[in-house]
View 1 (cartoon, one colour):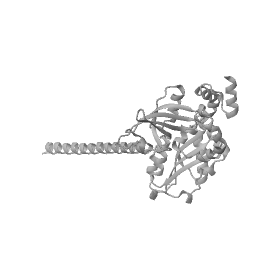
View 2 (cartoon, helix red, strand yellow):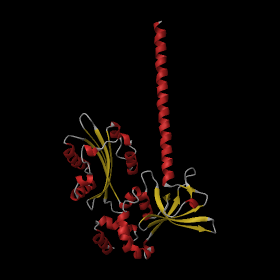
View 3 (cartoon, rainbow, N blue to C red):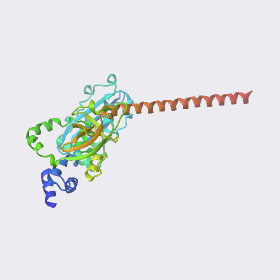
View 4 (cartoon, rainbow, N blue to C red):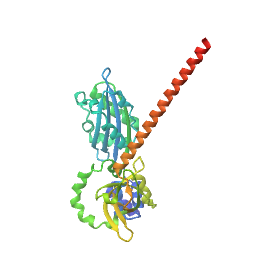
Length: 343
């Protein structure tokens, strides 16, 4: 066991705890433990931020930064700026997918071109060494130090004091792929030619998890309407140690898990379909579905969430309306009482 842990540590550059965790989840299989590493190591930084500056003509910037902390490399930046102060009320401590969606929905007519004012480009603002330093600071939970580093950098650009709020987290490569399925596609394509032969021979190294599909009668799709490569929403029902670990890892903040269909087989004896889905490298899910069930997809999941938000919004509007009516009735009642007392 110790020898295997030493091999994992030296091969992948991980610490003792990470090597032990990978080996335990792989049930002592060294090759499988090495394949599992993207599910174990949290090497990627996620930063949500908002900035405001300008004494008389305020500018508000909302931004998201994704970086590989171990490599000291920023791999994705999203940002928007506006003169509307409502931008600064947006909560940063929310699911990354929702945050980026909020950022993209900022009315294009309200956006300002910040390049006219400052050259706010995080990829140029931080060196590889500084990104690596940020990664270590975030790992140690020193949020204030991160904020001071960003503040010094940005105030150097705008030449004035700024208001800044940040939210930071670290996550595994696999978790990040839930948000950006194509983020690492170029990196994976480079390795594809070298790994094709190995892929054919590693069936025994795959992790196969029992799953059940989530059903969406209104917006879902039947299995006969889905193709290889389509994504569906499932629940990992596997109760093994690795099943429980991966279930928690792969869930979004909304509690759902997405998998891409790799294979669909019709079972004549039962009239059902056997479906193989892929969660990530060497991690698969197996489920059995009937032809009549409508399975939830990322699109139907979004529709359900939007519908829920609309209902909540209408309920809130209704409550506000009821409060206004109640306030008016109370005011009229008080006026009537005052008139009666006077006369």
